[in-house]
Image 1 (cartoon, rainbow, N blue to C red):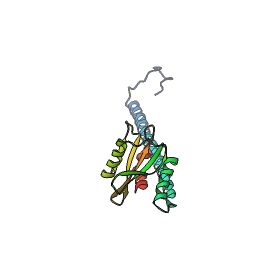
Image 2 (cartoon, rainbow, N blue to C red):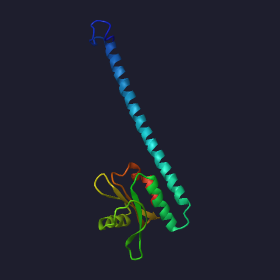
Image 3 (cartoon, helix red, strand yellow):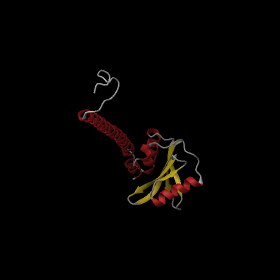
Image 4 (tube, rainbow, N blue to C red):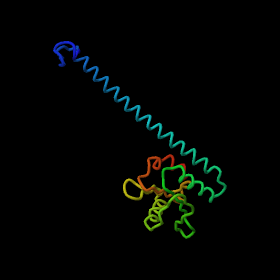
Length: 178
Protein backbone atom coordinates (compact mmCIF):
# COMPACT_ATOMS: atom_id res chain seq x y z
CA UNK A 1 0.00 0.00 0.00
CA UNK A 2 1.75 3.14 -1.18
CA UNK A 3 -0.46 5.88 0.20
CA UNK A 4 1.56 8.83 -1.11
CA UNK A 5 3.33 7.59 -4.22
CA UNK A 6 1.07 5.47 -6.41
CA UNK A 7 -2.32 6.50 -7.78
CA UNK A 8 -4.83 7.00 -6.43
CA UNK A 9 -2.79 9.46 -4.35
CA UNK A 10 -3.64 9.98 -0.67
CA UNK A 11 -6.27 7.24 -0.65
CA UNK A 12 -6.21 3.75 0.72
CA UNK A 13 -7.25 1.32 -1.98
CA UNK A 14 -8.02 -2.11 -0.61
CA UNK A 15 -9.50 -3.84 -3.62
CA UNK A 16 -7.27 -6.89 -3.51
CA UNK A 17 -7.34 -9.55 -0.82
CA UNK A 18 -3.60 -9.33 -0.28
CA UNK A 19 -3.99 -5.68 0.74
CA UNK A 20 -6.64 -6.61 3.33
CA UNK A 21 -4.40 -9.35 4.68
CA UNK A 22 -1.49 -6.88 4.96
CA UNK A 23 -3.59 -4.27 6.79
CA UNK A 24 -5.13 -6.82 9.16
CA UNK A 25 -1.71 -8.37 9.85
CA UNK A 26 -0.25 -4.96 10.60
CA UNK A 27 -3.11 -3.99 12.94
CA UNK A 28 -2.96 -7.37 14.69
CA UNK A 29 0.77 -6.95 15.25
CA UNK A 30 0.19 -3.44 16.66
CA UNK A 31 -2.46 -4.67 19.12
CA UNK A 32 -0.36 -7.67 20.22
CA UNK A 33 2.76 -5.54 20.74
CA UNK A 34 0.75 -2.92 22.62
CA UNK A 35 -0.75 -5.58 24.90
CA UNK A 36 2.66 -7.14 25.60
CA UNK A 37 4.16 -3.72 26.30
CA UNK A 38 1.38 -2.83 28.76
CA UNK A 39 1.84 -6.16 30.51
CA UNK A 40 5.62 -5.66 30.71
CA UNK A 41 5.13 -2.18 32.20
CA UNK A 42 2.68 -3.52 34.78
CA UNK A 43 5.07 -6.36 35.68
CA UNK A 44 7.96 -3.89 36.03
CA UNK A 45 5.89 -1.62 38.30
CA UNK A 46 4.82 -4.61 40.39
CA UNK A 47 8.42 -5.80 40.70
CA UNK A 48 9.52 -2.32 41.75
CA UNK A 49 6.77 -2.20 44.39
CA UNK A 50 7.73 -5.66 45.69
CA UNK A 51 11.38 -4.61 45.87
CA UNK A 52 10.41 -1.54 47.91
CA UNK A 53 8.33 -3.64 50.31
CA UNK A 54 11.20 -6.12 50.65
CA UNK A 55 13.57 -3.27 51.49
CA UNK A 56 11.10 -1.99 54.09
CA UNK A 57 10.82 -5.47 55.65
CA UNK A 58 14.62 -5.77 55.77
CA UNK A 59 14.87 -2.31 57.36
CA UNK A 60 12.35 -2.97 60.12
CA UNK A 61 13.87 -6.39 60.77
CA UNK A 62 17.28 -4.79 61.26
CA UNK A 63 15.83 -2.09 63.49
CA UNK A 64 14.11 -4.54 65.83
CA UNK A 65 16.96 -7.04 65.75
CA UNK A 66 18.97 -4.96 68.22
CA UNK A 67 16.11 -4.66 70.74
CA UNK A 68 16.76 -6.19 74.15
CA UNK A 69 13.36 -5.80 75.78
CA UNK A 70 9.79 -4.74 75.21
CA UNK A 71 10.35 -1.00 75.62
CA UNK A 72 13.33 -0.91 73.26
CA UNK A 73 11.39 -3.03 70.76
CA UNK A 74 8.42 -0.65 70.82
CA UNK A 75 10.71 2.36 70.50
CA UNK A 76 12.58 0.75 67.58
CA UNK A 77 9.34 0.07 65.71
CA UNK A 78 7.80 3.54 66.04
CA UNK A 79 11.10 5.35 65.47
CA UNK A 80 11.90 3.32 62.38
CA UNK A 81 8.37 3.75 60.97
CA UNK A 82 8.34 7.53 61.53
CA UNK A 83 11.76 7.93 59.89
CA UNK A 84 11.43 5.54 56.96
CA UNK A 85 7.80 5.48 55.93
CA UNK A 86 5.91 8.28 54.20
CA UNK A 87 3.79 8.91 57.30
CA UNK A 88 3.42 11.76 59.77
CA UNK A 89 3.65 9.61 62.89
CA UNK A 90 2.69 6.39 64.61
CA UNK A 91 1.96 5.06 68.07
CA UNK A 92 1.72 1.69 69.75
CA UNK A 93 -1.12 1.04 72.16
CA UNK A 94 -1.01 -1.96 74.49
CA UNK A 95 -3.67 -3.33 76.76
CA UNK A 96 -3.30 -2.30 80.39
CA UNK A 97 -4.16 -4.72 83.23
CA UNK A 98 -7.59 -3.06 83.51
CA UNK A 99 -8.29 -3.85 79.82
CA UNK A 100 -7.94 -0.30 78.50
CA UNK A 101 -5.60 0.52 75.65
CA UNK A 102 -2.83 2.94 76.57
CA UNK A 103 -0.14 4.53 74.42
CA UNK A 104 3.16 2.83 75.24
CA UNK A 105 5.35 4.48 72.62
CA UNK A 106 5.00 6.99 69.81
CA UNK A 107 7.09 8.84 67.23
CA UNK A 108 6.47 11.65 64.79
CA UNK A 109 3.52 14.00 64.94
CA UNK A 110 0.55 12.31 66.57
CA UNK A 111 -2.94 13.83 66.72
CA UNK A 112 -4.38 14.12 70.23
CA UNK A 113 -6.14 11.00 71.47
CA UNK A 114 -9.90 11.05 71.33
CA UNK A 115 -12.68 8.56 71.95
CA UNK A 116 -13.08 7.75 68.24
CA UNK A 117 -9.40 6.88 67.85
CA UNK A 118 -9.43 4.75 70.97
CA UNK A 119 -12.65 3.03 69.84
CA UNK A 120 -11.10 2.24 66.44
CA UNK A 121 -7.97 0.90 68.17
CA UNK A 122 -10.15 -1.24 70.44
CA UNK A 123 -12.04 -2.53 67.38
CA UNK A 124 -8.74 -3.46 65.68
CA UNK A 125 -7.67 -5.27 68.86
CA UNK A 126 -10.98 -7.10 69.24
CA UNK A 127 -11.50 -8.06 65.58
CA UNK A 128 -7.79 -8.55 64.77
CA UNK A 129 -8.41 -6.62 61.54
CA UNK A 130 -7.03 -3.42 60.03
CA UNK A 131 -9.34 -0.49 60.79
CA UNK A 132 -9.22 2.47 58.43
CA UNK A 133 -9.81 5.95 59.79
CA UNK A 134 -10.43 9.39 58.36
CA UNK A 135 -11.99 10.48 55.14
CA UNK A 136 -11.45 8.41 52.02
CA UNK A 137 -8.73 7.93 51.05
CA UNK A 138 -7.66 6.87 54.51
CA UNK A 139 -5.45 9.12 56.60
CA UNK A 140 -4.95 6.69 59.49
CA UNK A 141 -4.82 2.96 60.09
CA UNK A 142 -5.16 0.89 63.25
CA UNK A 143 -3.30 -2.40 62.84
CA UNK A 144 -3.59 -5.17 65.42
CA UNK A 145 -0.31 -6.40 66.91
CA UNK A 146 -0.49 -10.18 67.12
CA UNK A 147 1.42 -12.67 69.25
CA UNK A 148 0.46 -15.97 67.71
CA UNK A 149 -3.32 -15.90 67.48
CA UNK A 150 -3.75 -13.31 70.25
CA UNK A 151 -4.04 -9.57 69.64
CA UNK A 152 -1.89 -7.84 72.27
CA UNK A 153 -1.96 -4.25 71.06
CA UNK A 154 -2.50 -1.86 68.17
CA UNK A 155 -0.14 0.06 65.92
CA UNK A 156 -1.75 3.31 64.76
CA UNK A 157 -0.30 5.09 61.71
CA UNK A 158 -1.19 8.71 60.86
CA UNK A 159 -0.77 11.01 57.89
CA UNK A 160 -2.20 14.33 56.68
CA UNK A 161 -3.11 12.90 53.28
CA UNK A 162 -3.90 9.50 51.84
CA UNK A 163 -1.68 6.76 53.17
CA UNK A 164 0.62 5.44 50.42
CA UNK A 165 0.24 1.96 48.98
CA UNK A 166 3.15 0.50 50.97
CA UNK A 167 1.25 1.23 54.15
CA UNK A 168 -1.39 -1.23 53.00
CA UNK A 169 1.00 -3.97 51.89
CA UNK A 170 -0.04 -7.09 53.73
CA UNK A 171 3.44 -8.64 53.87
CA UNK A 172 4.98 -5.50 55.31
CA UNK A 173 2.44 -5.02 58.09
CA UNK A 174 2.46 -8.72 58.94
CA UNK A 175 6.20 -8.36 59.56
CA UNK A 176 5.78 -5.26 61.71
CA UNK A 177 2.78 -6.38 63.76
CA UNK A 178 3.57 -10.07 64.39
